Amino acid sequence: MKNTYIPLLVLTVLAAITAGAMIMNADADEKILIDEGGLEAENSPAVDGGNNDELQPLNTIATIIGIETWDSTTVLLLDQDESDIGEGYPCDIYLKIGQETTIKDSNGNELTIEYLENGTRIEAYYGPATTRSLPPQSGAVSIVVLDEDEKPGILQPVKTLGTILGTEKWTSSTMILLDEDDVEIGEGYPCDIYLSIGQETTITDSNGNELTIEDLTEGTRIEAYYGPMVTASLPPQSGTLKIVVLLE
Image (cartoon, rainbow, N blue to C red; front, side, top):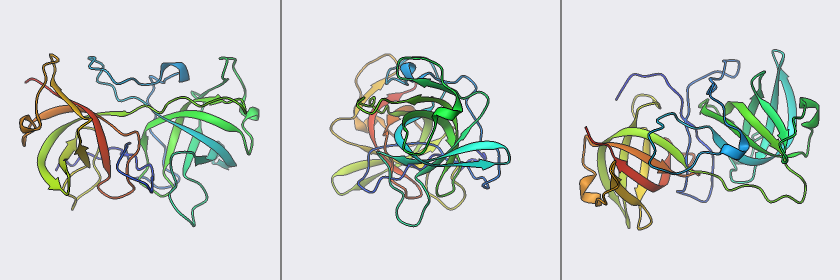
């Protein structure tokens, strides 16, 4: 395993193997890394076979249940629609609001931080780096304040690059043990993430030619789209939508 000290997201979902993110070791007061490229809400990450290798921010639909100030930084406590880390925690995720965070309404009009109140429904783009703590912490890239009767957008899958460390047969599905380029969950774990390969998973090479699960062998470099939900286990587990085998 690499000794890289980089993030991984654990978004908690009690129901299952369907999603993803990145987490990083950090203390509560440690600065969160933010993708400086940013992402507006209308440009949410898409599943495609493009050449953009930059990891995209994650997005979530949530209700603000608290607002705190940490060392002059405003922090939102969110109750996520798609995640529940369990009883005894103040929220599902902490989102830090920085100078680079954009805040808009659903029509694209710029808003100020004063519009973020308890009970406000938002769609937030954050990360992709988060802390490994529970609740996780991350920096907000953009926030869209939703109208009360507005239907939230569709959550997008997560993209990752990595090397296959091996495969395992679990009940009715095959699991890939993936060593992610930009994630390191620490020593003592068999991989950074387990990716479940199901009937809905498409497997191609970088030219778009269809491949089979037999082509996913140890040492193979891949680009994977999974989630957007992951389990709260370590390593996390997620369902895989698409795998692209990278040509050397």
